Image (cartoon, rainbow, N blue to C red):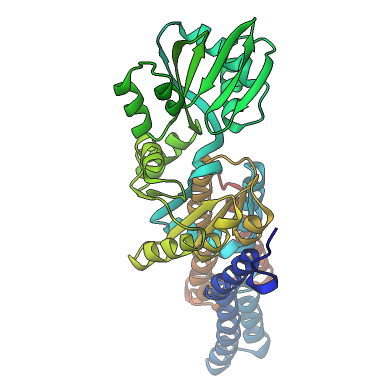
Length: 426
C-alpha cells in the first residue's frame, strides 16, 4: 500500500475547501419585511408628531391633538408587517417537512422561484444506482428459462450485476435454484452447475473465443445504448443474452416533464461515459447532458451554466457532488447521500425522489406569493388607516378613537395570520 497524499492534500480536504469557497462567495440578502417594519416605525413616529402639530396649529385642544397622535401610532404599529414573513415561513416549513423537504438555507429556498435550470447527478439521483435487466434476447430458450438459469448461477455472487439479475428475476416471480461448483472466470464471468447442468454467464469475449454465433446486430445495439450484456450458456449451447443497465427511477421522467412545463431546463452532469449518459438522457428527454465529468469539474459546470445567465440548482448525493451543491444557487442533496453532500446543500430531500425537486420549486413560488400578499396587505392597510387615524375625514364626521385604532391594528395582524395559514403545498 502506498499513501500518495495526506492531510490538506487529500481529496476529501480539497472537496471541503471547495465547499467553503463556494459558500463564502454567496451574497446575503436582507430581510424585506424587517426593513419595511423599520421604515414603518419611523413613518408612524413622524406621522404621529405631524398630526399632533397639525391639530394644535389648527387651534384644537391638547387632549384632542394627543388623542389623534396616539391613534396614529397605535394603528400604525408594525405588528402585521413584522409577522407577514415569519408566519409564512413557519407554515411553509411545516408543509416542507411533511413532504420530506428539509430546508437548511431559507434564502436559497425562497430564491428557488427564479430557477431557470436544474442540474441532476445521474447515479443515485435520476437512476437507482443499481443494475436491472432491460432486455432479454432469446436464442435457444425462452425468457423465463434464461432468467431461471442466470439467477440460479448468479445468486452465489455478490457482484452488482449478479445482484441485478437476481433482483429482476424475483420481481418477475421467477424462482431459482442453489448452484453448485461455482467458479469465477477472471475477466470473463461465472460458471457452475444448476440442476446438474453446466451453466456459464459470460462476456462477449468468451463467447467469441468459443466460436459461438449470436445476434451481432442486437448485441451492438445494446452496447451502443451503454448496456452491459451477459451471455448465458447452458451445456455449451447459447440460451440467450441479458442486457443490464443502471435503472432509471420511475419518478425521474415525470419530474423532468413537469420542470419543462414550468419553463425550467433539466440537465444531467455525470462521470459516466457518453454512451450511458446519452442513453439515460434520451430516456428522460433531458435538455443537456454533461458526461465524463471529473469530480472537481462538476462545480465548474454549475458555474458555466450560471455564467450563461441561468439561475441554477444542483441535485446530488455523493462526496463528488458537494462542491457543485455549494456553488449552485440552490443545492439539493438526496437524503440517502453522504454527510458531506448533505452539509453542503441548502435543502435535503429525505425521500430521495426527483419529484421532490419539483415540489420544492412549487412550494418556493407559493411561499413567495403568500409573503407578497401579506406584505401588501400590511403596507396597504396603513396607507388607508393612517390618514383616517390622523383625522382627514373629521369634517365628514368620521373620527377614529385609539380603541378603534387598536382593534384595526389587531384585525390586520389576524388577517395576515389567516392568509399565511391558507398557504397550500402544491
